[in-house]
Length: 375
Ligand SMILES: Cc1ncc(COP(=O)(O)O)c(C=O)c1O
Image 1 (cartoon, rainbow, N blue to C red):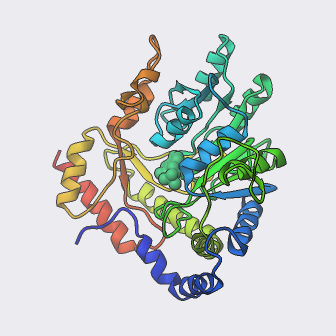
Image 2 (cartoon, rainbow, N blue to C red; image 1 turned 120 degrees about the vertical axis):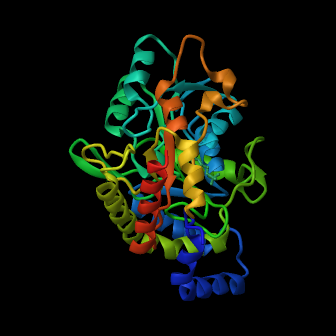
């Protein structure tokens, strides 16, 4: 039997009674879009990430696009993004008509290199906004980025799609990601740390104007019944069934993130002698290990041997952004992105999910050691 990288069905199994009741409740209420469940989830997520507002939307990609528009990013603006992330981060920038400014990442945490961005700004680059991505559940260096925000008046939109519950230290205080910039975007794709039973997303912000604009954009620009105050509104709403399920799973999030951290701790201890680069955690940060991403020199071969040994390890992602055909035009001449390219060539994500047993984890460790020895 193949060891899967994730286990959304297992999460359902342990919560089945609660989820079934909640779904039946929504179905019998007849309120399938928006309504009480969505409002309650928005309130609970806002409390969790410590923001004044949360706006539920259709998915994480929409959350990014709507947040950018709600923050006033528009045609002709430049938005700094990491050169290594899921495509959605960059797609959203392009979809609002802005231009992505690719910035290399840092080897140690796979997040945007804030120093490289600072150099670009110091040389006069006109940047309206920046999207730090807390990749694999590890927070980007928000403390350094918030300093740049002050100095250059940047708009900061966190891409927190992979990092529900992660923390970092800002001015000596441990803070959850999602409430650190002007707005933050979450995905509830089923395999995320907080995963729905379908697509879902949210924008968190403490700025009432950004929240109101985001809500307007996501609901056809409809200010009150059929008074459409925007021409470029759209439909991107969170379903009530997803909200009801997310409310149940949000109550488990900290416990399940702790379980991910325990598994990551065991992987780190047991794989220390192996020829792999292990993930590092920045001082003051708490990763929620959406992925446990190791670096392996012969990655594709190791992944293939692992598969033969019954372990499905993932490659997130096999290409840096500028190596994608659709985004290659955003690579600037004279710029290089060596850390992003290295990550794309070396990264291998081992199975990790909150309900993973010790036996399964040990089987992954044994298989990885064997795969490396065969190399
Ligand atoms: C870093 C990142 N940003 C954005 C998204 C987009 O989220 P969604 O799939 O819900 O549209 C994802 C989802 O995989 C992601 O990993």
